[in-house]
Image (cartoon, rainbow, N blue to C red):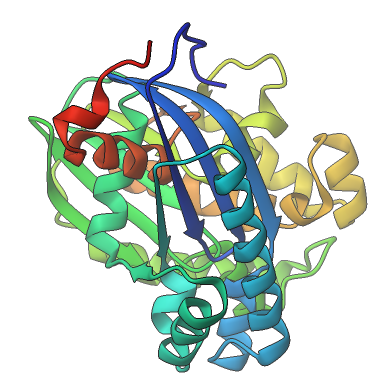
Length: 312
């Protein structure tokens, strides 16, 4: 949780329709400090569904509409002055995304911003700056259910950015990954990742790596229940090796994560390992914050000055 502050600022909200989860953050914002008022998450696995179906089926759209309606009610309870809802990779590639977004607008009363990958990376970087300050040039890596954002930041600006189809849900569907993981499927997983990482071959050398997003935070919690945010390459290799040899339920129990999150440990750890090796980085820092916090900071920065005054 972010720093606790006294007094009230602006109450703002951001909801992210991601490829693994649909997440809501309601925060009291005072300058560059956020105090979380509500932090809700529903695991819908849209990335895996869209990878298999190429669209969002009606049953999944029903669940999505229900989740967003509940989130809107939460925002009303906290008297949020603004709710920004956006969608990322799973919605971007779904063949019926226009129809789903229209249904959300009609039934929930919110307009969803279907953001491109570079904006997703920009918002994530902005969010990570709330708790991470690392030497630049820095790499930003965010693994979701449908895609992986890799960016290089120099002097506070993204100079290189690519979105790779290596989200954990997509990889699970493409490789038929099961637990324990058979060697042939691990080999296929590795080949898929290697092929896509050729697209970062011309990225400049970086001095540090910052990780955001649910997959990265899941790996952080699995490896560091003490909360230490600096993770080294041998730990990532160990997690990949150990989780691959367990059933999904055994892995979730051993690493103290939810079953759904446990199923992302092997593909997530392998992607992180291969990115680290490609960028010649031996450790990374995990941010507690990311795209939603970045979106809220942007909302606050763009708010009329009259509305940012402290309440008496």
